[in-house]
View 1 (cartoon, helix red, strand yellow):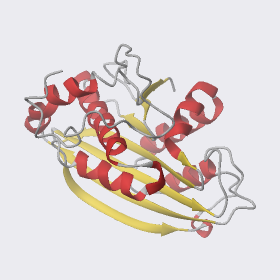
View 2: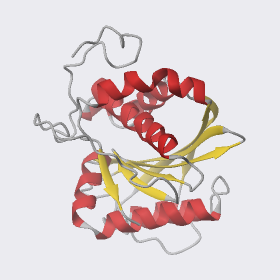
View 3: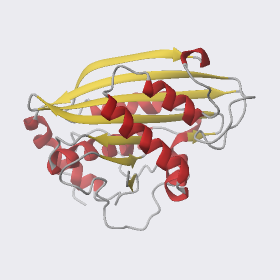
Length: 256
């Protein structure tokens, strides 16, 4: 592969550095996955440890551009971090990458969470995240419904569950993200919530593990970004060239 035209992109100075999370890259090359298969209507997909949803007003190209951006940020963040570093550094690299490939940051806030932040009974970490999203004014009701359906699908379908789990569990640490994309005033906009958990015991699964007897602390990041079409167009070919080598290792399609 000729990298001569893509040295300005982050994460490519060491293309041989592979992710450490249970080997997401298998060494065998498959056809690259298109996470969003429709040209209209709302959709959701798993991209690494993120549930990504798009609203109905995105074109087919908009959907592809959103998926490329999130997949590429995941790819670069895994190249640049190790499992024993936890997820804080992963999200830092993820966001740094996103903001270097055509997206402009409009909001970036982090806060500590506690069980008192919930308004209903919570049995698992997935319930905790669902409850938090349900009460988050960042998202519209349509976006909330899409995100929550996506989480419920992942939890109930084994293949999606296992794919998502390998990106969201690091022993006593966990992290998962949800994102929504829409077009507003001819500008592509992205809203993102990142949840990080740190427990006093190893957790095998952050979607199904009971939290009744686990002491944990959690942080939530709220990120908003925008991108004009010229910025996205500038990076598209370069991102797709690199991502073609990963062949969908970070993507799992989802029907909701």
